[in-house]
Image (cartoon, rainbow, N blue to C red; front, side):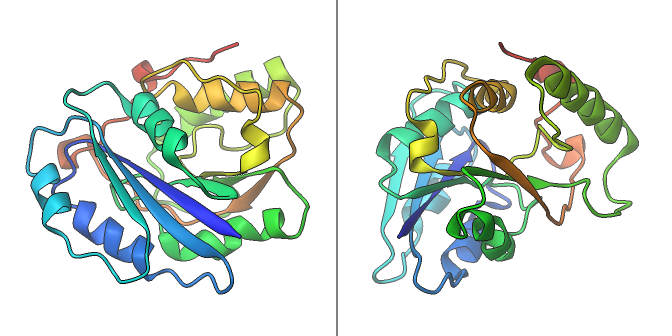
Length: 221
């Protein structure tokens, strides 16, 4: 069993090194791991940091640099094209989510209870989610649930973990942050079993490099 960790990255010179270190250090026992870094045309020092790294022996790492910035969706789709794992996990490069929770995310898949696992920031009490973020997410998640008959609590989560066959027959077209609702909609339309598990969340502010906003996301059907 192999896990492909796709890291879409754009202008994250302050955090990319730490994210890679944390992902590489996660011990998943019998589950092998590969890292796929999709650098989406970063214009800061991100590429130099990635290219200068020394990778752990025995850990497959694949790095792809886009000459221009296309968007998170494009970076995720690039990673999917080269992922060889039985399970796919998307890891943002901003340290908002904790790779040490991979075991929790993988458990429903390994136990055969789900085709897809979403890490929900709202299944346990936390005061760390900004009020505007919480309100926007509730609205988008509510619309998703109404449109597709789902019972999700966090459609916009960046932690989406999927068995490879769950993506069979699904064609993703978006290139920006709307990859999140597009993927969710198509998984639900394909009757994939989605299970949510509670995760930790360490949000950053826009002045710290936060790129996702309500205006950058829309539902896709």
